[in-house]
Length: 403
Image (cartoon, rainbow, N blue to C red; front, top):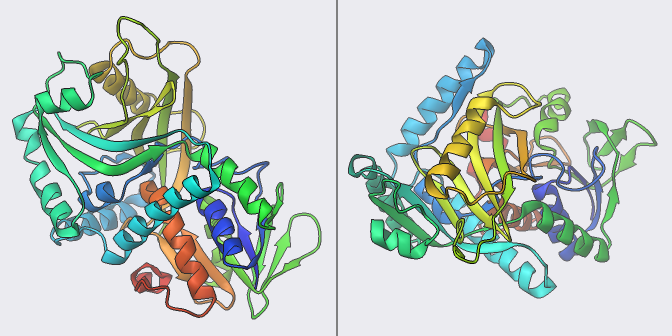
């Protein structure tokens, strides 16, 4: 089957590779100059099914216009409803995340991909009062049967010896099978492997219109229309403009995320500077991840706002977390500040599957769990394109749930 994929972020690259591996003839259309240039460029890089199941309290700053008040209300209601369930996300989502994580690990090993990678995620609470938030998270992890371990302050410091012993710390929750890695590095490596399987990449190719049908076609800003047997839309923030003319209007919100990536200082007297893997300050909603000899600090989620320069208050939270937990660990020079927009639905679930329009399939809106879901979603889409059920009841992820 000839498959045209729109978008070359993490979702697009993993979908391209998996569909080619399943024997499809794949061509990718990306409006930018390379893979992983948008929301996949410098994200926190968590591959974390257990974190997805635990679902710590969300910190989402309001920077929106009045027209997004409805989205904010719908998001609050969805969060409240999910908190009353044994699991805050549908079992199909967790199944795709667990399968996706296993698939990514298989690819890294079989293809010998050179990607900066760490295992383990440690959630930290500073006070006994705050640590009460851990109880529902632990209950969800138990319901999902995912490995986890409660730690007191001493055990947290033993697991992450670079933590500042002078910062107040009551305890933590360790998720040993969750992982972190360099998303852009992975995307670039997998792009080459997909190319070896015959995937064709067309960059600087802006898709203006999708014409649905049994043989859908793409109308580009330059060049002739491109026909295929199926179109898979992985275009992230560019998706609404392509879907709206097809009659698919979903209640998207625009969320801006921030990261700060900085080189670690190298001191013989202090070999444990910085995190060993990933540490999350639950109160601040900030993650700190080791990437080789650098650390990537992520957080500062904003609903609405504008593209462009990173927001001052959001970046301040990242600096505060780094100073509190790893003082003096970051070099002042060579720091990279990053801000990107991504689409999010009020229920924070992705849209994966048939669009309801002939020949058009969707793989969008994964949010912070995009990397964990990418492999499982790609595999499931391949099965569905072949007319099989894919072994996962992912009907809750199709756009019909929102109509």
